[in-house]
Length: 267
Image (spheres, rainbow, N blue to C red):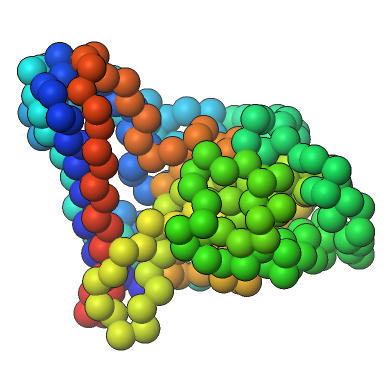
């Protein structure tokens, strides 16, 4: 599938800030499931700093903006070709040992309810267990926008029984309880069958299944990522995998506006 993506994030401040530093994880991953035709990341009034590929295989670049400034826009424009790999992250180079993803974070730490959920699921092998755990999360948490946010913990999402894509990968932390490394993945999803542009920032989980490696699971949509998905990066939780992380110098209160559109191009 050939997709065109536009992603604009605008920060507005009620008083001019003195400066801004950002770390961006906004370049598509390199693996067999996607090939970038062109991709541009810009920051209005910004100066591009260092860029590198981290141990998880994600491309990270730093930007800075000198103030005073009352508005900053981060823009992504790109075209990418994707193909269905049945959720398998094949051909992705990284150096972090999968066992590192068994660790808990403040957002992903399980409570008794999450541990009970994991203990109640069994599978014939790691892949089967991963599918069953993802299905259990789908049944336990109803997809409903506006109920949760990126800072909602896995335990809170399960207790609420509803939320959006953000909590779903965190809620897959029962995999860690079952001895399966799991991580949070950020990206885009083309979900309109008519090909019209639409808001499509999305997140899902990847679980390491042994010899098959990392496999994606989107509990919100009850499927594995296919050619409708564009992978950007991963982390231990939503905060660690955030596409944009920044720090400002100044006292102005911040307001955030995000616009994401994914459009299928003519084949």
